[in-house]
Each structure stands twice: as C-alpha cells, then as structure tokens.
Length: 160
Image (cartoon, rainbow, N blue to C red; front, side):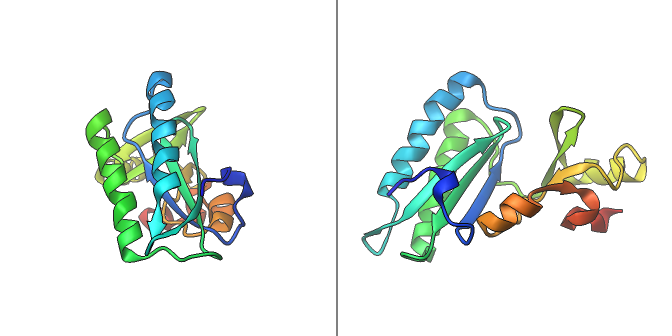
C-alpha cells in the first residue's frame, strides 16, 4: 500500500539513493509513477507493505517503509535494489554507489567521488560546517534530523 511519505511514522525504515546527477523535470515525471507502481506491488511473503517515497533536490530518491505492519525481508530489500538498478539502466544514472559524497555548495547540491571530496577537505575547499547528506540514516526520524547536517555531525567528520 502506498501512502504519502509524510504520513509514514517516524519509526519507519528509510533507504536513501543519491543520484550522481540531478534528474530533469521530464525524467521526474516518468520516475515518480514508476516508483509508485513498484511500491504498490512491494510485498514481503505475499503481504503488502505500507510504503511511501519522496524525491529531494531532484537527486535523492527516498523510500520509506512502515515496519509496524510487516518488516522488510531479504527478498523484499533485494526487490527494491533490483528496481533501483532498473532505474539506473533506464536513466543512465548511478544511484547505488555509496563511495560518493553529496554536499551543499551554496544553493546547489554538489556530488563528488569520495577521494575527490577528501582532497577538497585537505585543501579546505569545504569546511567542517559544510552541509553534507548522510545517506546512512536508517529511520524517518533520523532522516528528518540527521540527513542534511554540517559535516561535523555526520560520518563525514572522520575526513576532517
């Protein structure tokens, strides 16, 4: 069952997939119904899952799952990864590479390979207060509080 992302409880599990580029408006118009269609058919052992999604900054696909009704299983998680891999192929975009960093550069969201971001830290091209996106958050509550934070408040701080 698909619900609005903001209707999911804060305890809901989340997965954040960052794109290596922003999606165009045309792409978003195509992607949103595909995600909704996937979520409508997303099940665990034949039982429907209560899930929602949002797309932030035209770059981040966030899936949320209310596990109070049913927990995600290995098979249901695999299904979501397979779906995301399909989007990667169809739109020639990288959504699963966790070795990249997205951060705010003024009003814009920048995306760099981790090695390049480390160089930027050494060169002081980014500061400890640079806003980064912590895609390792696990719940909607963490996502709301700790997804978009200064580098000092994220795993990125180990690069300082």
